[in-house]
Image (cartoon, rainbow, N blue to C red; front, top):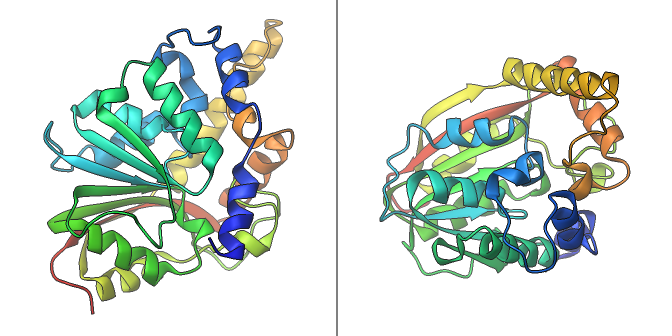
Length: 282
């Protein structure tokens, strides 16, 4: 693992994460967990579960499909995709803590048979050529400088005609976000790119672009709804629901605020892109 990847893994790593999540949803040691009870904890990207379902909604996913979730975090999208489609999902992530938590949460939600997780780099995937029908990448590319290498490895492990579905925060204006943000404490591990750069790197790897959609307005609506719900709970004397603060740490509010401001100012936005593998890479 390179220096940057080690820094990224440290950014996300958190001791005692499984215990904090289980306590937040009222599950004792080893007890089963209702997947839906994980709520906001389980989807570490803008828009949450709705964004995951929207991304895969138009894709040819069947029960016999094998999907690779690159940068799977604690496994939320993988669990949702498996539950909704019946497909088999393999997740990879740099952060060992995330992988172990993903495995345990999947076991305790009763989904262990359809899911597996591996600690690995997106730039060196430990799978044979043509192993997967679909690969997903949700809010991951911002931590990867080598977009060409990312696309090349994704293309290698996909079968001919396989899809790569990306939902990343991308550069859409001229400014940069203030730090920290959810994916980085400072600029050293933040590698925002424009949609055109993603498309160019994908084309070199043998993909064609079949879908591109900026989701800035949906992101702003998502954050506005989140603020309104928190205000309602506070007005009712209720604590905030368990959420991404469990994953992002004590500065979660600052990270979200900086992200929201940069989207409002038009500097960045979440963007969906779907590519189809049409040929071997250049």
